[in-house]
Length: 283
Ligand code: 13P
Ligand code: ZN
Ligand code: NA
Figure 1 (cartoon, rainbow, N blue to C red):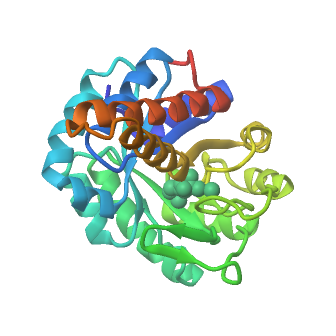
Figure 2 (figure 1 turned 180 degrees about the vertical axis):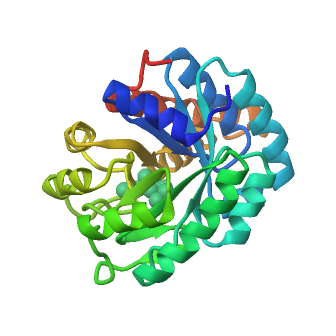
C-alpha cells in the first residue's frame, strides 16, 4: 500500500525501529526490492533522485512505481531523494510520490528555512510528506558533492528552530556518516544524535548508510533515527554481480539470465538492511 513518509515513520517511532530507504536506479529493480519487503513483512521507502527519475522517465515511474506500491501488501513510501529545488518537488508530486526531500542544506539557515517551508506548504496541501536536511553530510550523492572541509554536524538548537519554522515531517541530520563508501572505519556521533533528539520531536534520518557497521547504525536507531538511507551498497552489489554474470556466461546475450544474478544481489542487500534496522515482521 502506498503510504506517506509521515505515516511510515510514526509507526517506526512507536515500534522503536527504522525503515530502510533504498535508492533504486532502474525500473526492473523496483519489483525486486518490493518482493523482499513483502517477504520480510517490512515497510520500505523506495527513493529516487532527480537523475534516476530522468533516466527512468517520470511518467514510467509514476505508472509502474505507483501501481507496484499500491498492490504490495506492506507499506511503501515513494520518496524523492535530495530534491534540489521547489520545481523538483513539484515534478515528484505530479509523478504521484507520497514524500519529497528538499535539500537546501548548502544554504545559510534562513534560506534553508525559507526554501524548505515553501516545499512544505505545497506538499502538505497535496497530502505529501517532506524531509529536509540541516548540517552537511560529506561525500557524493549524484549531483550533491560535499567535501570533508564543508561537512558540518547538525546543531541541536538550530534543528529545533528549523523544525518549528518549517513544519517538516522528518529531519536529515549530519552526524558522522558519508555518502558512498568510507576510506576509514566510520564512527557515528551518537551523543550528537541524542542531543538533536532531545531538541526535536520529529523522526530523524540517517543519510550515507552504506558502509556503516551494523552496530553503529543500530545504536543510532536506539537514539531516534527512523529512516536509514542506502544507495551505494545496492548499486555496488548490482554491478559486481553483473560483471560476474557477464564473465560466467561469455556467449550469452539475453538480458534475462545476465540480469537475474544482479537483481538477486540487490535483493540480498535489501534483506540484510531490513533485518539490521529491525523493520522485518513490522508490516
Ligand atoms: P549511501 O550511498 O552511502 O548509502 O548514501 C545513501 C543516501 O544517503 C541517499 O540519500
Ligand atoms: Zn543522502
Ligand atoms: Na555511506
